[in-house]
Length: 187
Ligand code: HEC
Image (cartoon, rainbow, N blue to C red; front, side):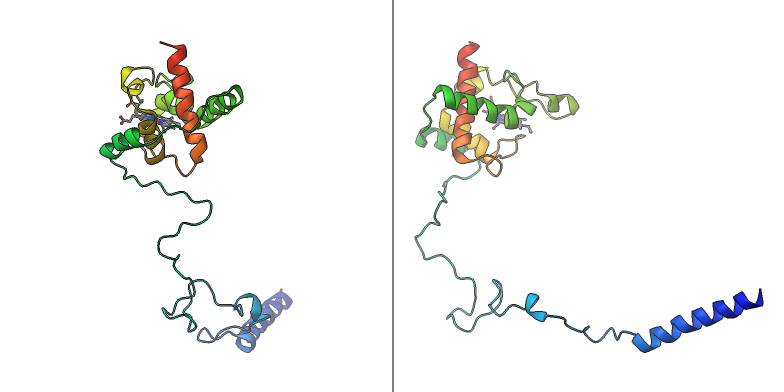
């Protein structure tokens, strides 16, 4: 028994001593091992930079230019703007059999959860308390221009969230085309 007490005291004492010897000073940085990984030789994107007149590393795009692959869409997110989109935008998608297949897929993945397989606003999400959307087969959606529906998908509409981050521009047009297909087949 006595042996264990001595051993415990020795162990605790040893640890205490070790802590004192190795003890870290919270005021001091630890030893930097291979610091090149953390502190790069190149300027970090957000760091100040003495080589540019404005003192920043990250430079703004040249005024009046557009990044490659980025096509701006100059609309606000209001209902008035969705009506303007209806007047100004033309659906670039020509519905072919292959595209129809894809448009159906887009609709099934992104729209069906709320709007339902047939567009009647009875998707599974609405059975869990989400406000059911109006049927896409009614006059409301039928009378909307393609550009307005595209705007709704891009910017959202009242209770519907925007889907521009999830769905590519072409695919958004395709889902508009699929709504038209649903409306055609179910007059
Ligand atoms: C999270 C659920 C949800 C998803 C997903 C969704 N919507 Fe909606 N959508 C709604 C709701 C809710 C409304 C009704 C908005 C309101 O009036 O408050 C709506 C309205 C609409 C309208 C206007 C209908 C009308 O008559 O006013 C269109 C068109 C539409 N959605 C198209 C789509 C398309 C196309 C997709 C897929 C790309 C989609 N929505 C995905 C919930 C959703």
